[in-house]
Amino acid sequence: DVKVTQSSRYLVKRTGEKVFLECVQDMDHENMFWYRQDPGLGLRLIYFSYDVKMKEKGDIPEGYSVSREKKERFSLILESASTNQTSMYLCASSLSLGTTYEQYFGPGTRLTVT
Amino acid sequence: GDSVTQMEGPVTLSEEAFLTINCTYTATGYPSLFWYVQYPGEGLQLLLKATKADDKGSNKGFEATYRKETTSFHLEKGSVQVSDSAVYFCALNQQGGSYIPTFGRGTSLIVHP
Image 1 (cartoon, each protein chain N blue to C red):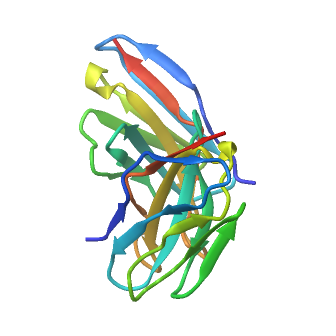
Image 2: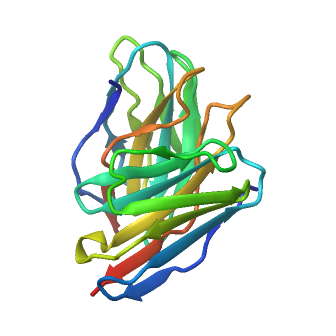
């Protein structure tokens, strides 16, 4: 089974702090994604990556950056955390070829910025 | 662009009731269709999928049929359990196209004993 792990389940940070959220998948998937999930808004794509060192902006990239130095690891960075970034953050991965692109999700990180 | 519309929740049912969660989509071409489920405190997981018209996806007693003529993929279960309480997301991916899925906003299901 594909396993996607996220570095923290719960995180509390102060306004202005730099925050790192890490995601690791163990099934050699090419594609990795970061979403945020807010009540009433569903899932919104922040960034995605289709290969090592490659990244593309999603629908809401402002205030975030990402890093993918190894195929299995995709990091989300909040350069200067703000209270409006309090949310649930979900990482996902998928294969590029030979599938219907179904996604495999991590358990999520609930981030609170105070 | 592509879009997915789900019925708004929460849907509240008693145990052993019949469940339907409606999902309709707008897409060019021939997308693959999915239902994902998110249990409390967890990430999403794939529940079932269908890749072409008239296909039926099924898993854990849930079913959905790909209806191209009505652009729908409604989720059904004959007898829900308390453990089915979760948020259900309908989604699509374009086959041979972008691997970024389009998700609906999710429908919360609450099942009472």
